[in-house]
Each structure stands twice: as structure tokens, then as C-alpha cells.
Length: 541
Image 1 (cartoon, rainbow, N blue to C red):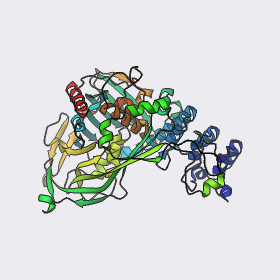
Image 2 (cartoon, rainbow, N blue to C red; image 1 turned 90 degrees about the horizontal axis):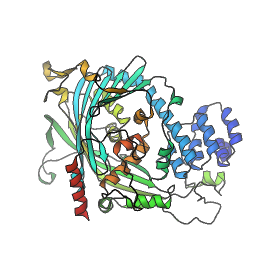
Image 3 (cartoon, rainbow, N blue to C red; image 1 turned 180 degrees about the vertical axis):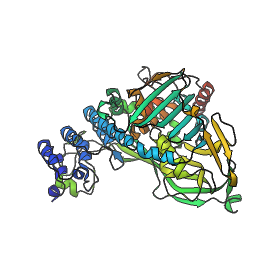
Image 4 (cartoon, rainbow, N blue to C red; image 1 turned 45 degrees about the vertical axis):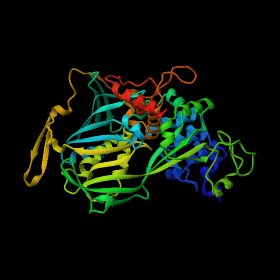
């Protein structure tokens, strides 16, 4: 029954790739390639999880969707868990091509949303905070200045990342503008006076683009798989109460000159899942050494989901080899209540938080029409905006969220505040503010805001170093967590073997590059902040 009900899965289980090729070519409906077995695996997910390279290749050539998940893990992560670099490279390249095509294909709709929305200027202040003593000292802040006119958007920022134990500041502008053939993306580095240009055609030649390198693959295989997400399934919103012990009336606060209702969001849970079965003993030891003792002490308890154990004796219902050659039959797999194909080294940790919202009923901006297209655009390349995007896409209470406080990691929260709407509070070059009858306001954005300075050097084309905004979110999360762990860890230039230690900065993390290959020029480092971090670590010892 299971063989006839899941014929493609059955062929993959026995690695019958010759028959699989014939079956795929004769499929009347390509949607059958995305059919899921009782454990939630598509044929591609099953082939990758079992390490079946030839079956995986045929499914990818047939157009199987790489951007799918099972038990919270993506296809690329499952490929990494096998420890096979060829499989990882194959899946990673196809995943990035599919995501690139999907995002480029969404440009016409995004341009239309931007063009239809009224023009505006707004500032978004991001304050990173922590409830952990000492760690809170290192948390920075930044203000995103957002200009929107027609189908053009400009975002200015100053927080670039961190180099080892110091946050790196600079001056960057990102400009997205629509064209007749698609869109253009400009990244302007005001410190080095360089401009990186990416032309995004509506029908791109994705086969000519190079997304990943062997160094990236090797880095994946030597670092833990980490999945961090906000679990908002059971979230509920409740009006905050004022007065002592909350005995007063419903709480309101003035934020950016606007009267706001204060809400608490209960049952916001941040979950981190980590897997290490693909790593060598040396890599595991290195990752363990990089773990910050403060996070271990103050952080949530870790739970071993599938702790590493010696391989059991072969039986009819177990499989435990690194790249599984399962002893169970396909029928036993389908009927089994457990979805495990091979043993995992996985631990989960979770912690509940209270998120907070400050909502204004008569804010001059529209969340859905004006702000959400900008957040969707920034979420393509920024994991912080991805969490914000996920949160505000929920069914929030009525009103505009002038200020939002949400957890990013187990010890770091982000507080986002909208201010200086239409540059009414503080004048901004290139923005002309208008107060209309009835209390409404608007802004006119000059052409100069979206122009590239003529004296800057221009670097263009679809080169590897401009592909960052299309990298997948899962490796960004892995690398970003690794970078934060490095930043919070003990200072030093050598590892346990006395060799030069590899440190990953945030832009390397977002680009998915190995240490030392980022094109960011670290200038203007905040040495006072670095000293504060080192002092914090000294006090913790």
C-alpha cells in the first residue's frame, strides 16, 4: 500500500535512481514532486536526508522545491547534517537560484505596492537591549532613515556589524529603485566612497550567477546547525495596566509625540534548535570552547532531543549511520510513529518572553500600505527585519505600532521605534514637509536623495560580492548566532591550538562568507565600547 501511495518516495528509499528518472519524466502532474509522506517529507527532503546524491540530482533537475522544511529543518540543513560536501553544494546552489528567481519574480508586485503608496519619510530606531547583567553594556543602537518616493526607496544606516569584540560603525545607504526592465539595487559606502550596483531583471539568467563557494560549504560542515525562531502560535495580546502593581486603569504612554495604548504580548516563545552530528570531534570542541559562559549561566535550559549514543545493533526498526543505509523497510518507515531516519545530535532550548506594543490609533502612516512593503524589502537581506516582519504580519490589535519590543535571541531584545515622521520634528536634507488641513502631513522627497554621488567609484554587475541580499535566511541565522557568540566570548587572538583564531563579523555572516573574506572595510571602530565589553567579561570571571 505504501509503495503505491508514495511511489516516488519508495524509489528513493531503495535508491532506484534509474527507475526514478523514468517515473519523473512520465509524471502527468509535477505537483506530485511535492507530495509529502506521513512524516512531512517531500521526495527531495527524503533523498537529501538519506544522502542519495543521484536521486537528489534528478529531483533538482526536475524542478523540485528546495525551499521546504520538515520538523523545522530545511533541505539545505538536512544536506549539511549528512556531512557530504557534494550534496551540500548541489542543494545550496539550487536553493539560492530558486530563491533568487522567486524574489526577482516578485519585483513587479513590490514596485506596484511602492508606487501606489503615498510618499513619506520616517526614522526607525533599533535599540538592542538585554536582561543579562554586563551583556547589556555591549548592546548598541541604530537609526534607519527611510525615504520613499514613487517606486524608489532609500535606507541609511550606521551600524555595520562587529569586528571580533567591537561593534563597527560606518555610513551606508541602500537604494532600491524601479526600472522598465526590473529594478536596481545600490549599496553606497560613504566611508570608502564606493558604490555596489546590482541590476535585477524580471527574467534573470540564474544559471550564470554564482552564489556559493567551496569555502562556504566547508564552513557549514564545521559549524553547528542552528535554527532560531519566534513561536507565536499561542500568542495573546492584553492591555497593560498603569499604577502600582497594575491596579490603575489601562496604560497609555507618549511615544514620538503620539498618544499610544500599551499592550503586552503573552506566550511569545523564542526557540533555538542546534544539531552537530555532521561535525568532527575537533570542530565540536572548538564550538564548545566558543560558547559564552554568561549565556550558559543566564540562558534557558538546553534539552537533548536525540543525544549522541553509540550506534545500536542493526534491527528492523533502527538506522544510525552518518549517511543512513537503513535496515528498516519502506513500509516500516511509513507506518512508524517516529520520523527519524538516522540518529541526530540535537538539543533544543526555549524561553518565554513578553513582547510589548505601543499602538496609536491616528498615526499618519499606514502599516499595510506604506510600512510593510519597506519591511518586506529589508527582510530580504536582514534577519532582524525578518523577525519584525513575522511579528507584525500577525493579527495585531488596532492601531499603528509606533514602538515594538520583541526578542531576537535568548538574551537580546530589539526595541523598534518610529519617529520624525515626514521630518516634522527635525529637518532632513532633501525632504520638504507639509502640514495639511485636518492635521494630516505629507512630504516631498527630492531627486537628489536617490542619486549616487558622482565622485564615488562604481562597482557593478551580478558579481559574487553583490549576491548577499539573496542568500538564504537559515545560514544567515547560523552565521549571525556564531558571530554573536564570538563577540560575547572571551577576547584573544589565538585558539586552543595556538593558531590564529577565525572571527566572523556580521557582514561576513550576512554574506555567508568564511572569516576574513568580507569586503567591509572596518573603519571608525568604537574602542571605548570594546573596552567596556572586555571589562564586562573580566567582571564575569
